Image (cartoon, rainbow, N blue to C red; front, side):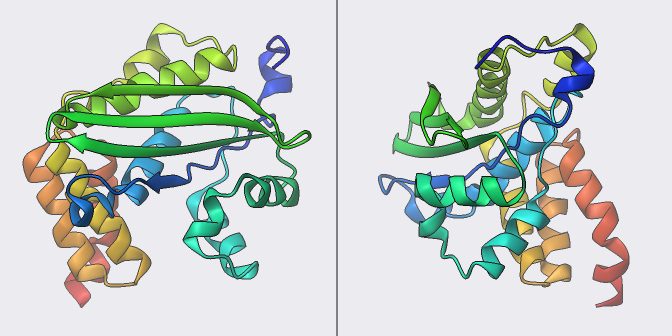
Length: 219
């Protein structure tokens, strides 16, 4: 990456796609839903830096449907680059995670240039699965640093919100996302509520719960 341009020029520079590839080690069934949850949290935290533009999940899902892609296709770099070109992106963030054992959880991220298809930089974080929020936020800061994005005190505090939430909260939030995508709103609402019961300060779960409440109660 070149040196960071001024903030105004940088607003529309980057596109992020968090394509989580799960490697099958431990707790396969419980890890599956985390793909959506970790992707959502990465997007939410990265967008807290106003210097970046991020393509929303809905638009990514639309492209996947239009191109008739499978989830496995999204792990292919050439396919991700193709999607990047379709939306005028310059950079893609791809990633993955794995749980090696009950005490070892890793999250990976790599920045790929849409123009050249080359990997710009790869980063990873590792720690206890119960510290998944802390690990995810650590990776966000590493990615922003690679992009030469200055993070001021206020932005850092925003990104660090919910840092002490635990694995089970993310698990139920992720289940909620999966159910919402299937338009199972009552069930999704219940999962967001469980996430909030475990982590009362979980802002994203609160937003999702409040947004779905009319649909859930109607159902």
